[in-house]
Length: 186
Image 1 (cartoon, one colour):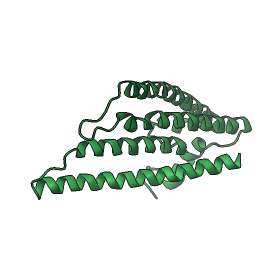
Image 2 (tube, rainbow, N blue to C red; image 1 turned 120 degrees about the vertical axis):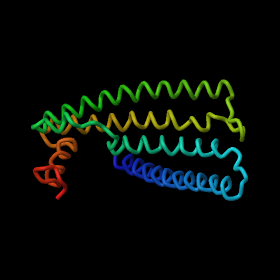
Image 3 (cartoon, rainbow, N blue to C red; image 1 turned 30 degrees about the vertical axis):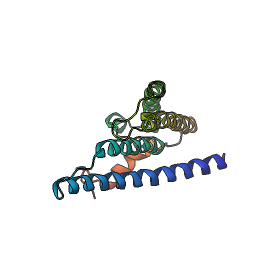
Image 4 (cartoon, helix red, strand yellow; image 1 turned 30 degrees about the horizontal axis):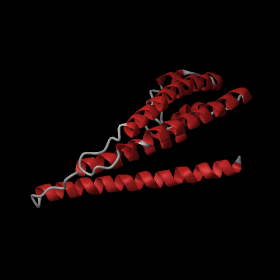
């Protein structure tokens, strides 16, 4: 199990670096595109195609990293009102199960979408590379999101069974410690 954790930690670290590099490249391409257009009155043909492809990969790499960290944006108003750790853990399990259902559906749709791209030999307009290369990140992202969500469910169920605090139960306490009674940051 430790070997699997080391492999996953390495994979996440490489993914974080890849997302960072993709972000920098996309920003540089947008700046270069603007400079060429407005300063040199020339065009960077196909820029939209390249930027879109790289941004697509960057976004979906970031999506499975956020799922791994359990840091997706969510409206956590209900959990904050719960007083007991047990209630907070149950609410987290419900939220994670709903997320798992959504990720499972999206995984199925992503595989279907990728299979369609492959079967139809879809290519990009300008550079004529297969769109399957761009869309291959979709099933990867959603499969990993399913795996990480199941791992979070298992961790929360174990915390619930042991009566301990999960991360969901600890987050409101950290917020209370960092703010005064008026909700202002200390």
